[in-house]
Length: 292
Image 1 (cartoon, rainbow, N blue to C red):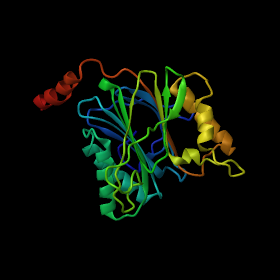
Image 2 (spheres, helix red, strand yellow):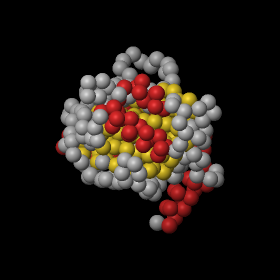
Image 3 (cartoon, rainbow, N blue to C red):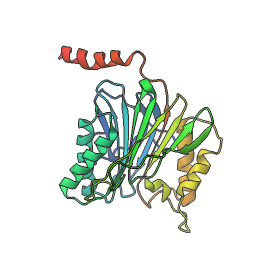
């Protein structure tokens, strides 16, 4: 993975994702290039796949980050309405903002501030996004959407998948909620909270997955994703990622998904960094400052 937005990076193949790369505390990695790699974040292990339809770079953006204490993992998938320089500019802004926000626990503030920043730029480029934050010490997953497709959550104890969304109470103030960013509005952003266990899994996508079309223009849509997810076939995240890609190519009847950018992250929740959370704060923050 690369932190340079716009750089095309080909990692692994569709049948064999590349091994994960390490993260330093407070680091953000990502971009809008081609990638198929294993990911390893605190409490999360899985596969990230992204392939632009227009050459090496496109409208989908992906970022992964770890907080300064080495505990909190964050994933952001975004879809920018456009390609080329517009995407590069939005991606650069997102990378800088997420880098400043690695220690901001409430991701609603992260989305709100990013939306305001994109509005200030006046680019008028609609950007949808999903932001997922996982804090292993409490096994707490929080997900927020900005006009973005809903993901799915697998529960190991029931063996079933369900939409990654809960009923959110109405906002205290009237107005827009969970709108895409960069379109001139200042909506409030909600959050969906879950307590997860090792073995549970999460699937996040961009709309290029849903809009993969067959030769007769039938979209892949959520029904086919849910049929695939609940097929009861066992295997790793890599196995499921391969089956999803095979299903998308089979539905399109093509070796290339040229209709739109296609991005997804499929990850399993695992045991987080060992030891008390306070120890990690001390180790990664106070000891690092002393070494400097």
